[in-house]
Image (cartoon, rainbow, N blue to C red; front, top):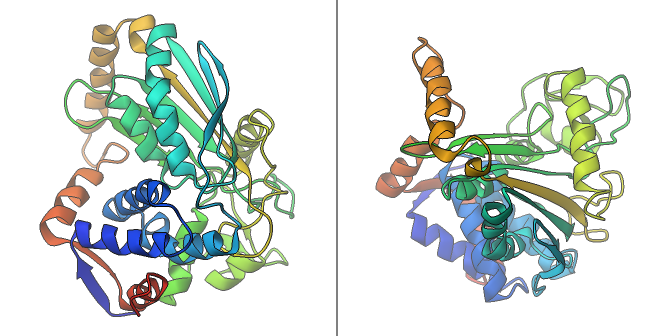
Length: 339
């Protein structure tokens, strides 16, 4: 395993920022990109964190993602937004959506935003968490380059199809559920490859359908297995329909890799829905009943709520900093022109 280096959150953010700016990304775009990657690193989602800098920067340099793009609102209705990401990074586009979107949900009771011609969306749970902090229920999903076969099939049709949900609570952090519909996100496999580690059996198969523990094989020629078997594959189809045809974006089978510099921009899509509880049962009733449900879970020995570890991890990051592989630090320093 690589040696590790510890950074403060601020130091790691500035290293990533320097790398992205040096990789043909505007400062206005680089800042939301690195804030999202830092948040992922802090929450232990390393496959969506610091490890993404080499692929993000390489794609910005090659033009596979437009680091200078400014997202625009294509279409607007009282309860809907359509945002053109313009083949740039997703994070500036969702920042644009948040300037308009929460008010629409509260004015109409429910609202949705579609992201067109987009890129990797990172930890989707962070985006819905921000909405839940404003008192909104939120559901977001996105399609990704092909990785998962339909149930009974052997050729990938769907991506990892990330899906996240958040609910506000009376006190404390919102409830957040965030998952890939494959057994694991591709970013976790990329992290294993970077660290020279095998992946657990059951995550992926090779090109012949045999189980593999080789991260390189899983990424280059393998097929990822759906979480929950047939049900996970069916949910993958749902996410594909809402994320690609509805947003006017590329299908998973048409999207190029998030990890390589070759090929056209991925041009995938994301779809986000927000609901104001006040428009239905009312905030007070909704929040009180959510706590009844959650208390029934917490009261059971051994049971825990989804996403609960993030509180501890965020405190730990502030107090102790973040440990990242030394070889990756060297690579990112080189990208930033500090090598």
